[in-house]
Amino acid sequence: MENILLLGGGGRECTLAWKITQSSLCNSLFIAPGNAGTPAYGTNLSIGVNDFAGIKAACLQHNISMLVVGPEDPLVAGVRDFFEADDQLKHIKVVGPGKEGAQLEGSKAFSKKFMERHNIPTAAYKEFTRDNFEDGLTYIASATPPFVLKADGLAAGKGVIITSDVKEAQDAFRSMIMDAQFGKAGDKVVIEQFLDGIELSVFALTDGEHYVLLPEAKDYKRVGEGDTGLNTGGMGAISPVPFADKVFMDKVVSRIVEPTVKGLKAEGIPYKGFIFFGLIKVNSEPMVIEYNSRMGDPETEVVIPRLKNDIVDLFIKMHQGRLNEVTIEHDTRAAGTVMLVAGGYPGDYRKGDVMTGFENVSGSMLLHAGTTTKDGNTVTNGGRVLAITSMGNNIKEALAVSFKNAALIDYAGKYYRKDIGWEF
Ligand code: AMP
Ligand code: GLY
Image 1: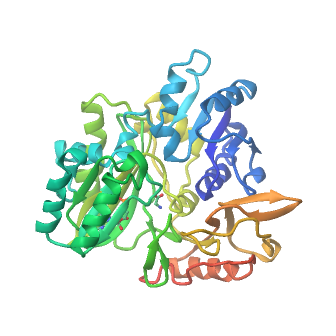
Image 2: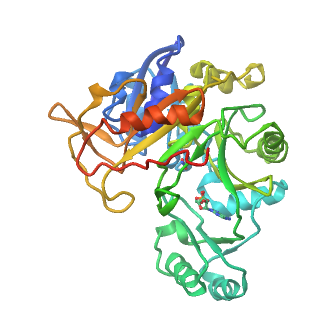
Image 3: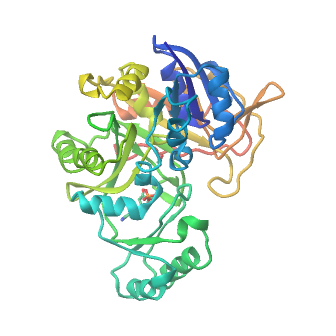
């Protein structure tokens, strides 16, 4: 029986908490820091995800045997390495790669070179720093638009700029490298070929040798209906993805998933955790847009409800290097999630607005994201506030229930996209 500490406080972690407590292998669950939804499943601890000393103290106090890392920051900062190097923590099963493996997400330049070494299909690219800044300007002037510029490091989903205007691209390039617009994350910039296609997210859990594939998903990144406006963390998600048929998924596995897992092993990079493949279908061929070293948010809110396996059992088998013994079972129904966000998001947004109407909801899971409890009320506390997930015979049916319930929750400045899943 495991005593589990889950790091994070978004919709992804609320979903993982919901799933973990259904396991007969879970003895106790703590969430750090959690949100207003997670106390339904475990005990919130007010510790930040990057506060390794605080996390250690909590592990010792609560006799933790498993650490599940939700977001990328602590992985890239080396939370696994910290646990492995500490005599009091090294017995704890950590779900998430070490610092080196997390570079798949933590450095665009690292991941591009990795894909190059292993012949994994991705956009052609060049990398630039302050040292060859002028070359970068010339490169943009001579390249074919649209230009895709990516800050090398973690930039909370904001480090990608796409524009067809040469001057705008050069200005953005200058702000990243010379004016540190994204801090150190922009010391290096990757400029890559624009890929035109439809995106999807594929998830594997690997023990470094074997892997299992979870249900695939598609998220809706733009804030506005019709996929317009600024990029967000994700305004909704669906699973399964209708165009991800067997022929396509076989290509994803043989050209992308397997070479990635084998490549990590061949390079001596141990990896025990989730790999999120951000893919794009270009003329029926899959290509990698990015890797993440964790689950997606809001993709988790549709992927995990469709996973029938005991997730704690999967984590234990992963730790033991026995994922080859596992068969993943999917719920054949579709899942759709609609994200309620705070007014103003993804720009400056409101916080602290009282939320009402939870009791009117039926037929959906309410997966809290940026919420907290204040004076006995649930109040908004982040850009993405609440994920509403429903299951149905198809995507339209699932989403219809989520939309119905989205209308019943109320708070000042409420916004959500009413067209999630519009293409299906
Ligand atoms: P990333 O942070 O790398 O996932 O990029 C954020 C978003 O920018 C992606 O989800 C895509 O919508 C878009 N994007 C990134 N790279 C490319 C590319 N090479 N071609 C077209 N769109 C891209
Ligand atoms: N939904 C995209 C992400 O989690 O990065």
